[in-house]
Image (cartoon, rainbow, N blue to C red; front, side, top):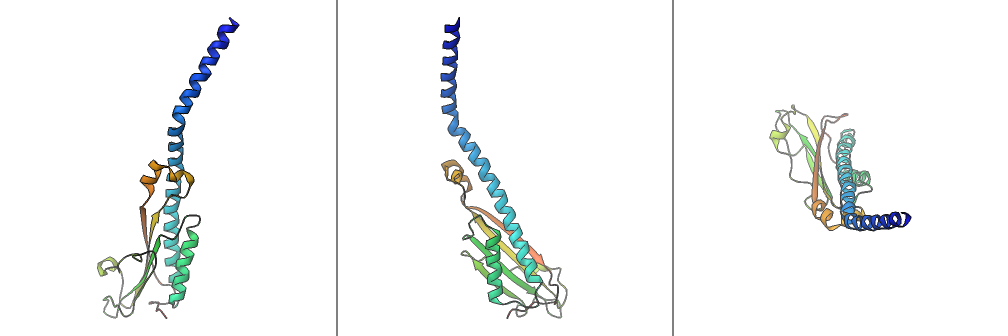
Amino acid sequence: MTYALKRFCRNVRGAAAVEFALLLPLMLIIWGGIVEIGNVHFAGRKVALATQSIADLIAQERAVSDAELANLAQAGNAIMFPYPSGNMSYHMQSIATDADGGIDATLGWLRTFGAAGGGGDPVLPPEVGFLLSNDSTIYVRVAYTYTPVSVLGSIAGINAVLTGLAFSEEAFAKPRRINIIPIQ
């Protein structure tokens, strides 16, 4: 009886090892996918945070310069840590109206920073119909292309799905200290 029990246990261990060896690659891919999906989620949240923060910081100023806007783009890059920020683009714009309530391109400004494309085209007037006369708003759009950051993201199946995944966030903020924030 003891011999039969030992033989049975040896056979069970061998079968379990084979099953485990067959399932291990699939389990690693699933686990890696879960980790990378979490990274995608957190990267998207960081893009939203960077966009809102930049719009809020610009809205607190009485005037801005190109150097200050470039620093804000660097602050957005810092917010994205630990995710790579080389593929981010920033579109910062002040949309201003004249005394008649029409969009006045001479009062507003537009600056782009970062990856090629610079965040897109200027906002069209219908998208800012909430402005009054002699008024303005700050508009910030941040675009980010996700690249896997963990070793698990380099697994062929996961990498093919996640590489090139693009995020884009927009934020509007009303100037707090002055109606129209000029650029110096």
